[in-house]
Amino acid sequence: MRLIVGLGNPDPEYQWTPHNLGFMVVDELANRNGIRVERPAGKALVGRGKVAGEEVALAKPQTYMNLSGISVRELLAKYDLDVAALLVMWDEVQLPLGTIRIHPDGSAGSHNGAQSVISAVGTQKFARLRLGCGPDHPLASRKEHVLRPMRKTELEAAAEMVGEAGDAVEMILMQGLHAAMTKYNRRRPDEPDQAEQK
Image (cartoon, rainbow, N blue to C red):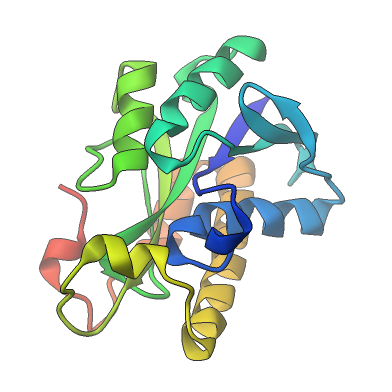
């Protein structure tokens, strides 16, 4: 079984903010596969089912972003899974809106939710899918950007990206992480070099 976790904040006011892009991909996968992500477990809402023929647990931690790792650690223990079975999805302001990146490991960068997961599970070596939410202009406040509701044009771009991320997760489950990286980690012409995860 694979544990697929989208990071976000549980309150309705955060529903359409960039910080909840991870939740949005979980919802996309749930809707595609008839999975109800409603059962409380491990400080998260969880749904069990099959995605791309693989048994999965889809999870949306309810701890708030900065404590996401507590939930991830509890879910791994609950399902008796190693971090090799983990895939975590989060928003990434270092990437342009609409861009996804898949990696088998790496640092959290400036993302507090990702840092919480790394601290809680004790390693950086788990699969992650980062969802670009960066604007095309310098940010005065990264926090304000990721916690404000997206505008209509941003929501349209986000919806397209969430659909592509759903496809990418299905490919990861069917063909493996590196096949998905080859297909989806293409650099866009307008993407700055520093967007790649160090």
